[in-house]
Amino acid sequence: MSVTLSVRTPEVVPPRTPSLAAIVYPQNKYPAAAFEALVASCRRNRLSLAGVVQHPVDAASERRCDVLLEDLSTGRRTSIYEDRGAGASGCRLDESALAEVAARIEGSLGDAPDVLVLNKFGKAECGGGGLLDLIAKAMECNITVVIGVPQSNLFAWRVFAGEFGTELSADSGEIERWVEGLR
Image 1 (tube, rainbow, N blue to C red):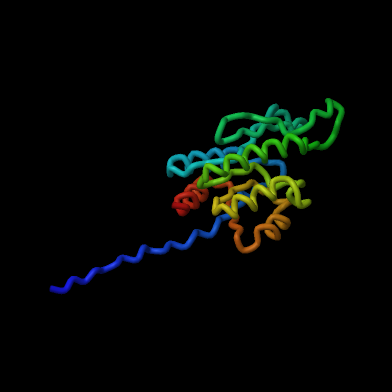
Image 2: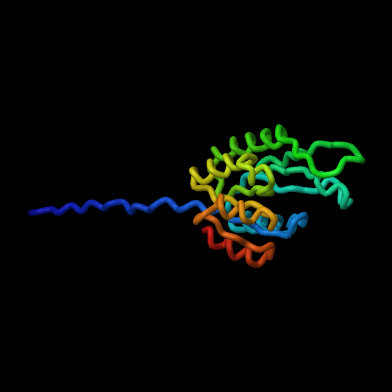
């Protein structure tokens, strides 16, 4: 009696290419509703999240730079702009606060989230700093990254993202369809 053993070879699934998506918006019109839709859609689709979304501190137009970043893992909120007083003009990013937020987010990447949400590809990122190292680390870990990109920074975004970049509008339906494609 002859017995033939068959050995099943496990299916090899190649790692997915990390996705890098920009929610493109007009300058100074942060798409809060689009990010709320993104977070809600990810949660409905049982995708784990890391990263931050931004919330205004004061809705007054002269204080448009005053924002808090909310950590999606912990709910902790951190101000990332220096208070330069009532007479100051222009925005002043508190780079040490941003670095602290980035370090906390980087620590959460060890939990292997499905999606990393970042509020803005801003001046710091256009200049080669800011959250770029965090984005690169997430991509190395095959984590999908979604970031807000104001139209004025779109060229720098495209140079950075290259072939990995996808651009989304702030339309919640488009965002929902894109999130469903992640599964």
